[in-house]
Image 1 (cartoon, one colour):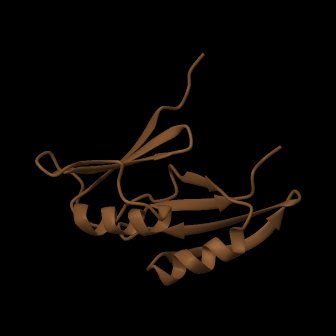
Image 2 (tube, rainbow, N blue to C red):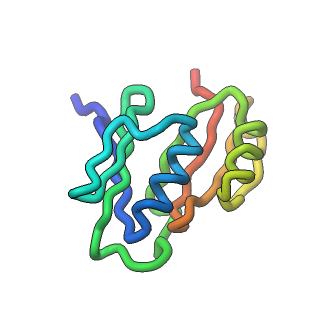
Amino acid sequence: MLSLNSVMIGTQQLKELASFYQKVLDKPADMIDTENGFYGWQVGATFIGVLEHSEMKGPSKDPGRVMINFETTQVKEEFERIMALGGVAIKAPYEIGGGWIATLADPDGNFFQLITPMD
């Protein structure tokens, strides 16, 4: 059986993306390796890393292909908080199946979602 261990986001805007996710996650990076261009956070059972990658140029070309979902019981409030931090609204909070979901983009244009915890 597989278990999701980590998600890596490659960028050429390392400091900007690291700063953005530090604010979104409301905590400093748990791991910083400036020599190798890496910042990472433990978020629940999954590690999220932002790393400098020379092949990533410009904004994400297909931002909805892979999305990170952050669980929260306060989708609307977190949506507004992240918008104030520079997140870009892709889809405002809406109700679906008794829960809430919203989609935003980070400074590289990668989509991520806020979702109510699933039963």
